Length: 320
Image (cartoon, rainbow, N blue to C red; front, side, top):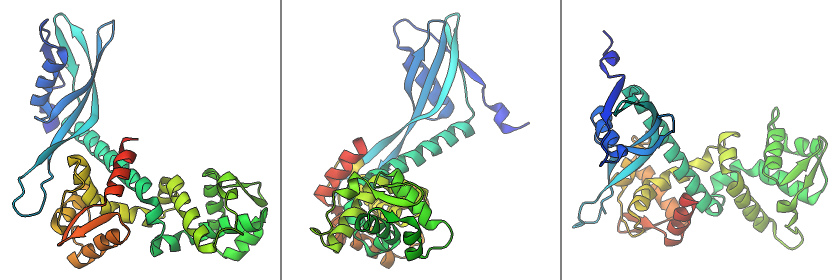
């Protein structure tokens, strides 16, 4: 017999007048799915059908790594990992259950969404700094060229842009479509026209260096997710992932003065993204020091802590 058939398909919970149904349901579901389970939403229709959304919480050590600090454990809530249905039968709630495998899949999906939200918040908070790094600027060079040429030779001939870039296949066209989607340009199939976000730059009043920095920062701010997912510019996700090795704990603890060492940061990166465990400490330190040089992190005596402005920006972006 398959082990999964040993799991109950439903549970019956007695209704008591003096006890909220959510409490009774939650207590029963803790026995099925584990002690961290909670009811995140409960809805009962007039005809007696039920909808129960459940979440789970797990402990996270967010202790300051400096000597003599008291240990701090935070419980992180992951909402809506499953939605259960049921009905009222006589004086009981009968709830149909999902298998533990299905609930675990829901948990993993919601954890992935949590990582994505944290990465997006980090990118929005630090886009202007990330855009200044040589690796990012190099990958975004074709986009910078299209924007500059469109502004300089408005309306710019697409065929000339494609010829100047000398890219294989349809790469230039994909960049053009992305910039059109982000609202920087308009493309009629032959010519590229500057739209308001690009038109505001007067190339006679601003240096090429200033234009490159400002326009790339704006492109990253508006299109971080699209650029990284659709165009495969994974470099945009690189530094935010390392930064979140620190800020994951700092935001949970709501403490920009939280000091973490490299092992604690490494553990967070592994927990969040499931990789980098084999990264040499020297290379990991290089990543952290790059974040310090960009004013995304601060460092003191081999401990890393938040840049206060960045912490404020990330907190605001995460709750937006």
